[in-house]
Image (cartoon, rainbow, N blue to C red; front, side, top):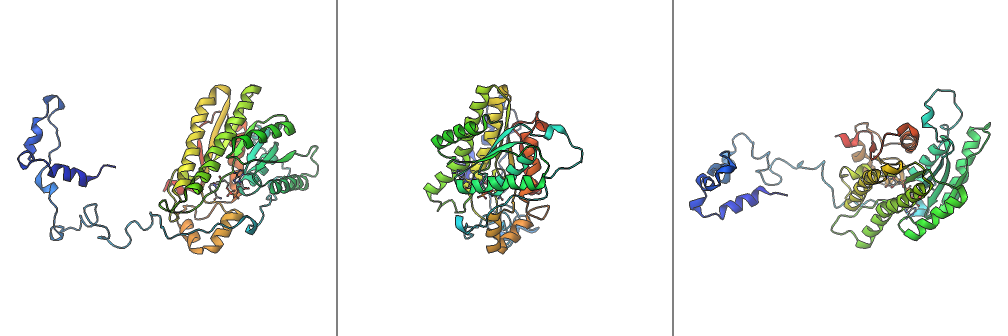
Length: 374
Ligand SMILES: NC(=O)c1ccc[n+]([C@@H]2O[C@H](COP(=O)([O-])OP(=O)(O)OC[C@H]3O[C@@H](n4cnc5c(N)ncnc54)[C@H](O)[C@@H]3O)[C@@H](O)[C@H]2O)c1
């Protein structure tokens, strides 16, 4: 970034004889006559006594702290903030939501239906991925849940079907929901998983990439192997699965819709917890969606991104129960004043996966209670 001090220093090194405005007069005439005039009062530091109207102490002219302790306090990360992520075994299980999938007689657009589609959801065993899978099932799709934790994915697949059955006792067909292992950051594992899904379902029409995680270390102390892992799952994982599914769609000469789960962190910098690699990874996910949307538009493959704000999943609830101050800071920064429910993503993912969004590609749909607008 350009620093005014550097300009000041550079100008100070110009011999005094040339330091006057006239030195700039030597510029070629074609540059015009409206040159920058560097006059002495701008270059000389004022003393505090010169700051009669308090203007300098509230501006960049003042040293840090000159206008009070509050300087930057609501918009900086804090290296002392340590968010403890629970171990896998300490997390309450995610369960399908109820009361949102039954038969209804309210009219709605047929283009939102996913009847006859097969959708793959990575990270679908729990959290946001599980609830988005349920939205796809309720909208008519068969779903393949892909997760590092296959056991959990199997349990969730069973519960999705059971919940559907309870809420749709007269349904003439039950959705097919299968569970598959993959480490999304590993190309071989991704390819094997896609092959297994194709064996089970015969085709893939939609992809939702929800496998991902965040971590908080300040940038100076971030262990490099952890950073690589984070990028591997969030960025490589999204890319590898997208390419695998796009290849299949192109071979089948079929249109399709891919939805990447980014985060508002891809557009803003969260405070106070430091998480530079996660923020950058989610920015990469968002731009990957835009880039692949352009690259695959010719094949009728749409690629969009959903950027959730702070959502209250089993994981974030546990973290906030342990850190009530953090909960206060987060909710104070959200215009709607509340964290989102995973269910708040159900409409967004159905819209982007379905024909209701046929002319939407490369978009980033922020579902964040207004966080990124302020
Ligand atoms: N929860 C939030 O507030 C929030 C906000 C914005 C974005 N997001 C993003 O949404 C996505 C889902 O988050 P969540 O809160 O549901 O998290 P979660 O931890 O509850 O679920 C993530 C799932 O991904 C799986 N997973 C992790 N690494 C994997 C790998 N290498 N291969 C396959 N599966 C893997 C986990 O086993 C888990 O089932 C993530 O990408 C996250 O960054 C979450």
